[in-house]
Amino acid sequence: MSEHYIARVTTKGQVTVPLELRKSLNIKEGDYILFEKKGSRVEIRKMIPFNDFEEFARPIRERFQKEGITPRDVEEAINWARRGVK
Image (tube, rainbow, N blue to C red; front, side, top):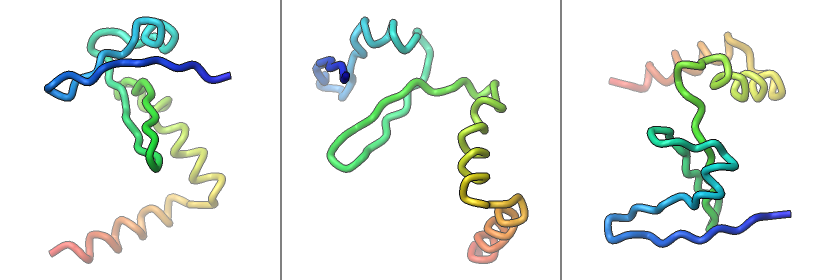
């Protein structure tokens, strides 16, 4: 079941995340949130602190494993991209 929250955009383009949503997502002052555009919709989520690299990298690692992307594939892609940069 989806939950709906309403917030108004200020003249500076700022939005206050509703209290109930901040509590349920454990969003605190200083946290970062990610806005991801999906067609005409926007999904927001709390960012994982960058000091927890393992937790940050887990979804990437899982996607690579699912799609069969190897470390060698990544290295080749990086090298290919660097060759295009002058």
